[in-house]
Structures are given as C-alpha cells and as structure tokens.
Image (cartoon, rainbow, N blue to C red):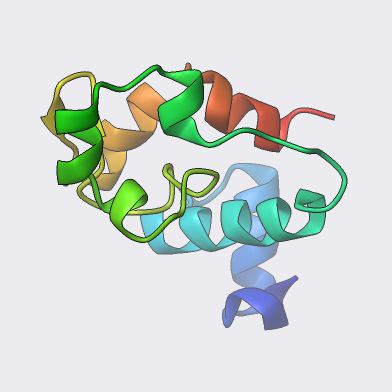
Length: 107
C-alpha cells in the first residue's frame, strides 16, 4: 500500500493506527484505487443521472464535460448542491453522503 501511495510504510502504519491524519492527497488516491478495483464489479450510473441534474447545470460541470459521472467525487470543480466544489475537505463532506460515492465504497 505504501508503494501505491508513494509514501513510507511508517506513514501508512500511522494512518491505520490513527497516529497521523491522512492527507487529502493520500485519501484521494486511496479512493481512486478502490474505485478502479470496483469499476467492473458494479454497473453504476453516472452522477448526473442519479442526481437528476438539469441540462444547464450538466453543461457547466467538469464531470459532464469529461464524461466522468462515476468519478465526480474525484474531480475538482464539480457542481454539487448548486455550486462548484473546489476545496477537497468541503467536497468530501458532500460526497460522503452522496449515493454516487457510497456505491463506490460500499461492499
């Protein structure tokens, strides 16, 4: 895991034991790795379908522009809850309760 995250084994042990807080860059990378492992196991719908985004919102959203509706949680600047999400911590507060993200991390 440390090798995949380009960090030290001690750092990973610290995250696991709760001695260190997980940096946003590491958290983001872990979620991306998990999503790639699950990509073929679940036939998920795009975020704009699940959230029923109106056409004008979709056209402004980077997830729509890059056809990445299953990775909306990973992309900065997505338009969730009516405004562009630019800060990772604030974005993840929204994403953690979103069914698009939850479907990726649930067993």
